[in-house]
Amino acid sequence: MDHAADAHRTDLMTITRFVLNEQSKYPESRGDFTILLSHIVLGCKFVCTAVNKAGLAKLLGLAGETNVQGEDQKKLDVLSNEVFIKALVSSGRTCVLVSEEDEEATFVEPAKRGKYCVVFDPLDGSSNIDCGVSIGTIFGIYMMKDAHEPTLDDVLQPGKNMLAAGYCMYGSSCTLVLSTGKGVNGFTLDPSLGEFILTHPDIKIPKKGKIYSVNEGNAKNWDGPTSKYVENCKFPKDGSSPKSLRYIGSMVADVHRTLLYGGIFLYPADKKSPNGKLRVLYEVFPMSFLMEQAGGQAFTGKQRALDLVPKKIHDRAPIFLGSYDDVEEIKRLYAAEEKN
Ligand SMILES: O=P(O)(O)OC[C@H]1O[C@](O)(COP(=O)(O)O)[C@@H](O)[C@@H]1O
Ligand SMILES: [Mg+2]
Ligand SMILES: [Mg+2]
Image (spheres, rainbow, N blue to C red):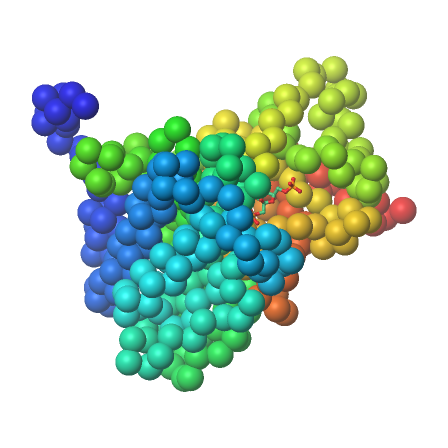
């Protein structure tokens, strides 16, 4: 690390300073959000370290348990979940927590309770853990509806009610991407400082992209509009060049690339999974919130993803998200299908 070069850099904006500046714009804010976020950031740093040394610290492989989704939990799924539950409860700013790894929501005891609800996927891309491919953590933050005993209603809100959303990608570098409803910013962890530094200010997704990202292994079970869309990506009828296929199999990594390069990420419904695979509260909503904040779109095949109102905490929904024009194309195909 060239500390000399760093010493001259005056724009060393840490995520804490960034959020503090944001919050200072709202006189009513008492810093509660900043405190909550600093605990999420701490959790990300902890998990990043664990992921980096997973092979050395015997943290690869299965934990021997199965989660509510019927998936065999990885050791890092369980560890990340424990880390975030502890970090969020100890922030003293949360009341309801929903994790992919816990069947039931966690209601924080009154003495440690605050006004925020956090929904999160502690470790996303679990199938890629043991081969060291990029994985991540996804989170979304709601305000509890009003001052009463917190209930599930405080999290079963439409995605558009989220106050903030983000993800942390554990890849070649550790990148945290955050939106508090005023645009999207990316921060890279500087391991020598232990600080997330602003490296991607005001991310705007390109209006149209050259990449499509989907698990084509499910193609035989797709509906008409999805099949037509992917066919158009490969064999464009307007003479434009075919799109490139990129699919990592970790939503965080596939969405991160889509956000920066443009294009579309889709996990559609199909005959086998009529509601798709990805979970509404802690995968679909946070990523849709970020995509819209960056100028893109997020669509379920029927409606704007953020207008969905989940009935259960582990509900799933089909998702098409990415560059505005690319998602517009799939919306047209579903609208045409509807007309027929
Ligand atoms: O293997 P598939 O069916 O393509 O599914 C991949 C998708 O499943 C996920 O791994 C599900 O998330 P988890 O790993 O958190 O369970 C997404 O990250 C990814 O987009
Ligand atoms: Mg996930
Ligand atoms: Mg997960």
